[in-house]
Length: 543
Image (cartoon, rainbow, N blue to C red; front, top):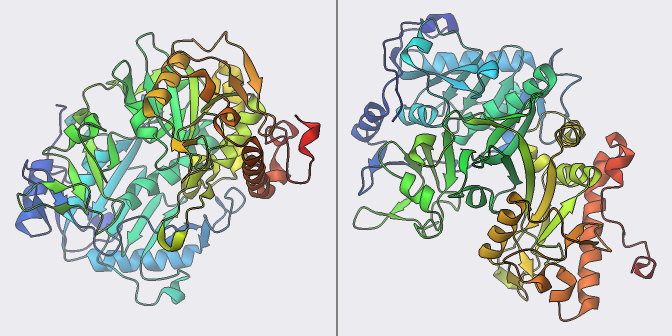
């Protein structure tokens, strides 16, 4: 258990214009939990873990995320549907409204850090309307010692007022009553109208995703990371449901973090956070032992449903599919205490290919690595209603598009440069389907995926023969310990080779179409990293 500093801090909130507030500074988690339960804002599970309901919003609201457009951001940000602009004037007006709303109330303030590597430590001050929002900050950010809290002056301020709903969104240049706005010049993340805690986490993540590459030459990454006994670091990128959390939890390796990291000029990989924010839908001790055991007093569950005996029914998605738990990282046993490590050796891009056409494991060239990183592919399996069983390709640039303020090729080029400088291997791992698409084939067994990752980490795929997939251009190992060789080339697993080729060309075409919006900024090397053929080519030339 680490030191949770609770010394009385008397920084005045008047500097922010907050008047007549009854402010609680840096309360310990037990106290925040007690206040939440006593005020009937949450209840305790059978084992004493706090559970809250986040109300109207049970997930982030990407359409209501804005960045203030000013002289600092104007030429840097990749403006568009992800990064929507709002004026300084409108921001200032909204901030004034939020401050007026919070004035006179009982509120909760907490000082914390982001970025575990000492050189990059960023001071965060969060002012929250709700006690349990403050507990989330305790769990998810890095917890300062009593000494570090003395004379604390924040680099970034989070103002979080879920109870403030903007009465006239149009007048303020926003879409509806809730908003999450980042102001880089004032260094403020302003959140109103939504109690979903992930808005605070991802607000700071988005801020770091611009500041670190632009000002500090650090590559920010939406990934998990762990380190082996020999000090070799592995990085796992992947969208929701691809196995990022599952595969980075490895009894032989220490967890650095599960979601947000930076890669420095000196090849240090550091966690931005001090906690984990894990999905708990269908959670079981057998499938996710680390997460299951982390749900204990101090953790905070969101939007779960209880059984009659006071235990959580993790199978119940009646409030949302996106049920969550936040907990301080020390709830996991096997962690890298400093939350940073050197020597990145292997990067894994995890994709759940529901078309069943990508190889279960392939090794990427630098150009392919940048191409697949910028593409950020996985496939969503549609609901089975009305007979829809066809998967839908889903692309999220840099495996984290909603949080990336810069143009994706900037992150792609940085990754490509870093991997070449550090001599890192990059691997594409398909945790999805084999022997046919969703509905025909079957999901690749987790034990095989684990065996592939273990083989790579042990260096067992350094000296095996590879063959190139004729459609995607990916290099597939012909042998991998612990994995049946016949599944390594996906075409072998399909009964009808023609059906494989047809489906593979269809997916290759989706890649090309998605990449068109990046083509102008992408180098020749990156452009050549994509699938070898498109629908316009004749396959015979390649096979």
